[in-house]
Length: 244
Image 1: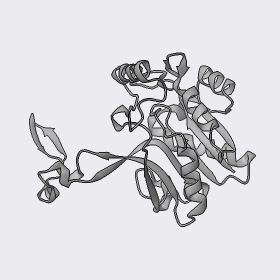
Image 2: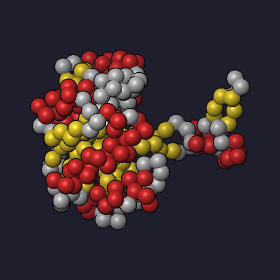
Image 3: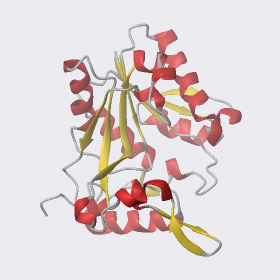
């Protein structure tokens, strides 16, 4: 059984209610569920939440709701919240195999991203997980921080390895649009790579190519909402295609 698990707590500190923020009559949660329902490889969609409004929206959109208490909605309790949800699912559906976990707040997804991720794991048993990634404009060796009002190297011991040209640098970050992992990887997460050790050790990175990379949005602040509103106002919920 392959499922989508959406972690959609209420009460975010930075932007309360961000998972159910409405963008032109569509909440981010509905947006995510709609994307998931288009998948041919997903058997069921679940929403884990501590909020009644989120549960109502998720249920009306066709997801099964997993209620968690407010204690499991704290940022530091994320792993426990996922564990709570996965245990709930496994108890009901013993044949649970692959879990795809999208973030509502990163709404622009390739139309086939769920199928592409799940099919990769079905066809490549040596991998633990698949994640969406995006190229960054820096490498860790070039990072800086501020100490005593001065800009200084974040990793002074390795700064000498950094190139002065960004074109010579190549680094990628997990963008959390979709994380797709095996149930067995979750069970053995103590052996995985931190901080997201449930992804295991053999991780496939997928660069999405449907959307223009400048349309990437990760909603955490009111400014992010303004940018997302701007994109949707001008380009619709699908955003700008990469070849536009």
